Image 1 (cartoon, rainbow, N blue to C red):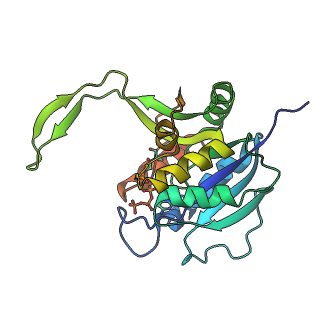
Image 2 (cartoon, rainbow, N blue to C red):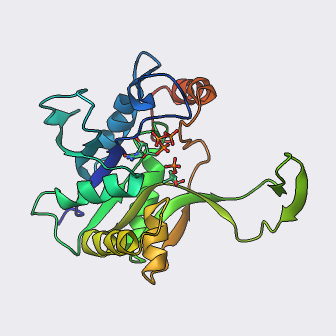
Length: 236
Ligand SMILES: Nc1ccn([C@@H]2O[C@H](COP(=O)(O)OP(=O)(O)OP(=O)(O)O)[C@@H](O)[C@H]2O)c(=O)n1
Ligand SMILES: C[C@](O)(CO)[C@H](O)COP(=O)(O)O
């Protein structure tokens, strides 16, 4: 029996304010095509991903009637004010075939360089551990800045990780955790934080540090280099 496939929620309803300009960053050109299409192409290329649920801002008319991408089914939902709202909106409209106990992936539209091998590693390891996320241990010294931009202290680095995406959890548990965080008006910056608040212990799965989140204008050049380096072969 073939391994179960997973749907991936792709939060893409942000405004990209840290990049600047009028066009949300996910639609800005990167290596000749909109950033989001690189991300979706990576996800669609993974054999364990069944389909993509893309959450878009109500104002975005980027893909009217989008139903497939690179051979994979695509559904869309309208995102919310915060990333967590957008993720929850996507979870709510996944196909009924995705049961509460089924794992789902969540991957930022703004992370176009994710490696397929890392997605496979996450699915294998986090699937055996009741959920988890890609990340990497902090490898630089961490400073706390004062209001004047001076280093006032050095933070402990041991057991500190940077969180990436995809993150992978069971649909029902993740929806419940996100709803509870919203009910408590707790701002959660990733799915794992909501799960931690709900008492779960997401597995940290080390992934490549080139899985960058395009956040500022300078990140586009780095992302373009990384995409060219792998020559579009995301399997490395
Ligand atoms: N209300 C929101 C906010 C963010 N996102 C998505 O979550 C991912 C990571 O968020 P971030 O990098 O912060 O994107 P923006 O919120 O657009 O960036 P900024 O904070 O600079 O406005 C992005 O793919 C973004 O489109 C979303 O779906 N809904
Ligand atoms: C989910 C995330 O990419 C993990 O690092 C990050 O928390 C998104 O944060 P942002 O402020 O919404 O970019």
